[in-house]
Each structure stands twice: as C-alpha cells, then as structure tokens.
Length: 183
Image (cartoon, rainbow, N blue to C red; front, side, top):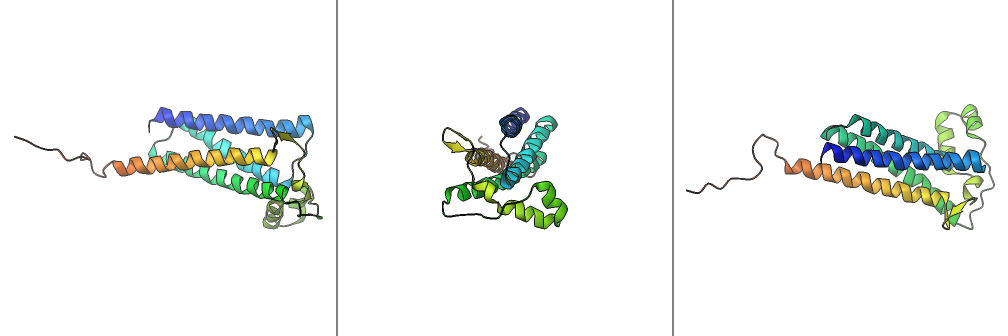
C-alpha cells in the first residue's frame, strides 16, 4: 500500500467524521435537540476516530504506524458501533419503559465516582429511547450505526491488507520467488 493511498483514506475518514460531528453539533445547537447519554458516548468515539484519522493523514506513517492508527480507528469504530447498536435496540423495544431519568453529565460526574458515572452513561436512560429526529426514516442512532459499521469495515479491511502485504514480503533481504536457472 502506498503512502499516498493510506493518507487519502485517512483524510477521507477524517472528513467523514468531521462532517458527522458537525452535523451532531448542528442538531444540538441550531435545531435544539438535547443529546442523551448514549449520544454523548457515540460522540466521544466519533471524536476519537476523527482525531486519529486526522493525525494519521497529517503524519503519513509507514507500515507499523499504519497498523497502530488502523487499530485505534477500529477500536473507536467498534466502541461507537456498540453504543449505537445499544441505542437502536433500546429504541426498537416498545416494551422497554425506562422510568429513571439520568442527570446531566456534569452532575453525574461530580456526584459519583468516574467509573460509576461512565457505566451509568453507557447503560442509557429514558431520553435514549425517544426518537426526536429522522432523515429518510432513519433515526440519529441508526445513522450513527451505519457510519461506525462502515468505518469498522474500512479499518478491518486495511488491517487485513497490511497483514497480507507483510506476509508476502520475506523477512530477509532475499527475493520472495525462487529463480529458475536454466542453461
């Protein structure tokens, strides 16, 4: 894989993440939709993914650096996929009635230990079940899930491709194919 190809892939992933983050901030501040705790967790993973891809696009790493950046991108994408999938399942379950409302994240982190606050945010609240905005009949968590799955597939494919290319090259400086010497 050439350096230019990896830089352009990282830049495209960075651009897609920046657009998705911009859309989430637009929906929060311009439209007035308040994000729930799972939306904030997804936004955190989206920020990590966008920052990682932007840094990799600027850095332009070689094989080991590419692997590390793609692993971080894959982990961020899988974390976001998990949070989005949980919220989609919560929205799709009509029997689920969450009575308990979660306080604002600032209040949550100031009143309880950090790990307990994170676990409470990931578990979701009654706000996470409400569908307040759709585009093409898909809710925000469903769009987020599609984005994270696409980024996970991209990162996984690039990691497999890096491993495959590494296995094709010999460890020593010798040629990988035997030469046939004929008289």
